[in-house]
Image (tube, rainbow, N blue to C red; front, side, top):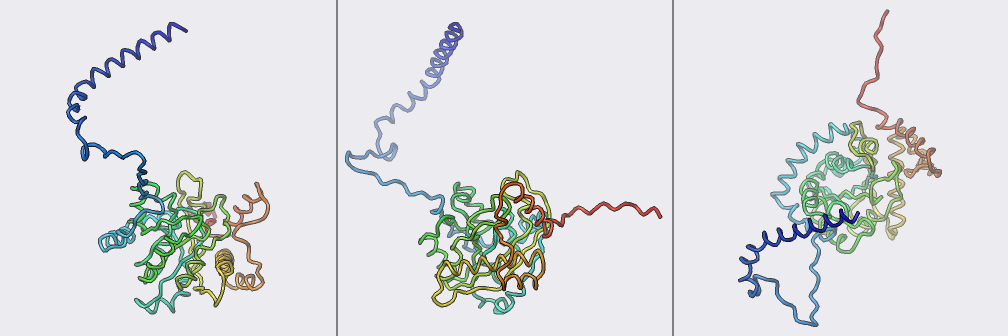
Length: 339
């Protein structure tokens, strides 16, 4: 054992000498610069002076103003109407329903108000799906509220999200004043918004309780909230899946909701969640059945059954059979007719 250690130490000493010899010319070349000061070397700081920390330009502080200027808008239109739309078609093959509920507003054309679209969230496919499913005139001026800690933690990732999706960095835990002021200014300029009230993708295939972001922004900006239910994307590329599995999806738009006089964020948020829940029931059954259940507040919850474990997953698989996830691309095998 000692012999091995000796060999190892000797090898390390020889390697150190080789490194010193190799770096000697570089040290000699840099020696004249040792006495040079600023700007060739960082400025010195007097004792007792605290240097303020450099403000981060990532996360919620990432600047996306450039993504809404003319060159970026032109590039995004090409991306959205070409590669992105083709990817959504191949991967999710969406069926779009309920667009007629926005007909009164879309008929106003350029005078149509900005809207806040509030869908449920099961997959990364949801955002490209919404970008291509939202009808005109809102699609051309649509921005996405994206998790700042996920999409904007690196410059390259943030730039790609801002350019391709016109994404905004939003703190998923709380809608801060800075973010709400930015969104308010964008809505005043005619930009519509997609925001996921659940705050993140479903961890197990079922929905999560809604947070008040969409309701708060609607009350503050006056923009109506459009409830949206997305079905099938959890089976295509849900959280935890390593690669997508092509299938079918369905997007159901609801009628716009507006906050009532004096309505609190909590109450309005509950109405938005109830509307998305009813759309989910409609996607799995039919309009009339879903409306009857909505009147008695008996629509199946987005969050799924109360129990846990295998029974909860079994119930999820049974529900998916009723929706778009149960309609796979592959045709059922048909035996030849031997008669």
